[in-house]
Image (cartoon, rainbow, N blue to C red; front, side, top):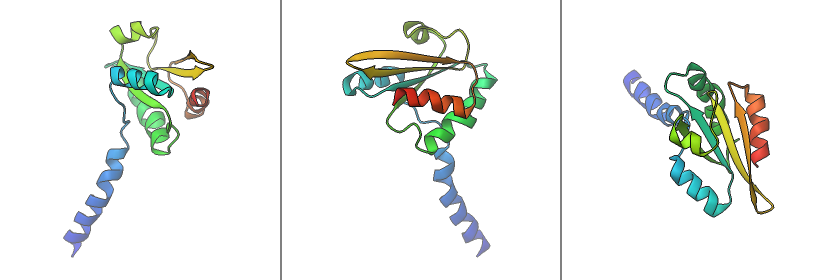
Length: 128
């Protein structure tokens, strides 16, 4: 009986645990979809050796996505490199770069460094 209960509990909790990871599509697909649809684009720039990037994804972006706060945005993550140079660079990581269409023009927003969830919420509101 206890075995069945443990297995049932594990099955019920597994989807929730998987949902806690930031779901992002590749940059090229995200940018193309954003241009076609007019939806705002949120780019999270990170590097491999960046503890603040890992912490920010886990403590800020993933909870915001789980709570539906990123709903309506196209979300992508990129490593520092050619793509970041193409979209305006990131002098520090983590960096958030957002694009929003206003009056037929794309407006670019940028937030660098590790930030609190409240500051990122304010940034996300600019994109909606």
